[in-house]
Image 1 (tube, rainbow, N blue to C red):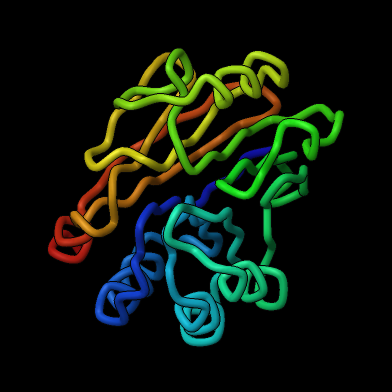
Image 2 (tube, rainbow, N blue to C red):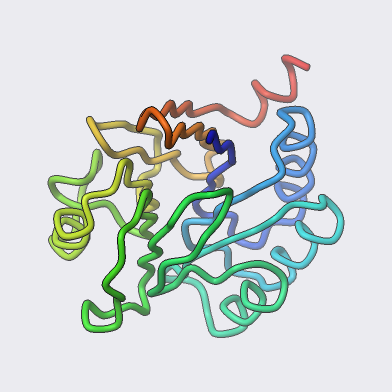
Length: 193
């Protein structure tokens, strides 16, 4: 089984960027979007679901408030502090509102976090809590927010900041336990189609 989706960090409630993200998702044939924190506006979640027809899942970042969490709950999927099924994957979400005690015991294919780890990260500063989570759950891949520019390690990927025009494209093949990640700039996606 293969899964394809977009990941973004730091939408920051910017409506013009939402529109570009919507167009890019259509050009790439992507139907699922995972937001890695700092979405900022619950209206952004609603508009991306309604206007772009995207399935959306997300975690909370430093700049997100309870209204953003409610938007993910009502319009899509709030991954915060839980394991959920999405695109055939078991995904554990760890945003800024999670404690280690709130995380369930479960097998996971993918961990998504608002911050990078130290070992399970590719930019600074890293969180030892993210390392603990990834070392405990042993995901096929960890996808992190918290990095301005895209980066990749052996089992970790950060798409970079959407504020700086970056998105991540993820392809996972669970049958073969392989994955491929690509960081793209929105302007490159739009100019190439």
